[in-house]
Image (cartoon, rainbow, N blue to C red; front, top):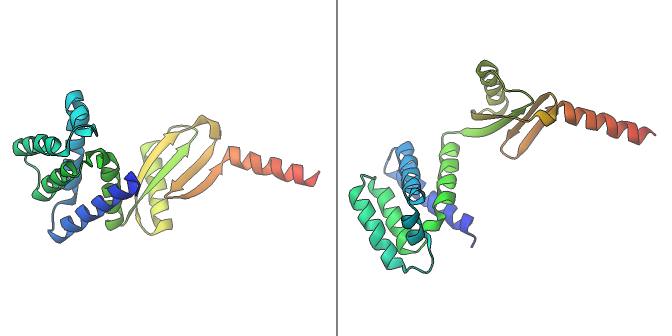
Length: 182
């Protein structure tokens, strides 16, 4: 089993327990991120908790000490203790991403990324977000980025679907038609 698959399973289990216990999903996500930042923000702590050469019981002890000082939800604390016990704390970044995705799916929100040649004004980005929401029938979590290589137009990526209305792709299609007609 790959690390991503294992992280996804832990995230799914955490989300299902949070749903069953009617926990605040955003707080669960925030606490996951806080713990990850705590680990990554302290070099020594990161070396201890993520090093496979250090025995799992020692990691469990360190995590127990950290959890005793923190005010995490019980389900989140149990997850951290379980990850330490099984020496799986290295999965935390993938677990957080899988949990985020599971939460977005539950809320019927889809991520969309819009690429343009120039920065979009916020009103225009909102209008594009509304258009994509109508097209997908879901709420949109929109991120924008600038790529001058597309020359003009827009490239929208929703999940694995790409809508390319850029000048660059249009020019490539014209070029291909001209080559085919020769």
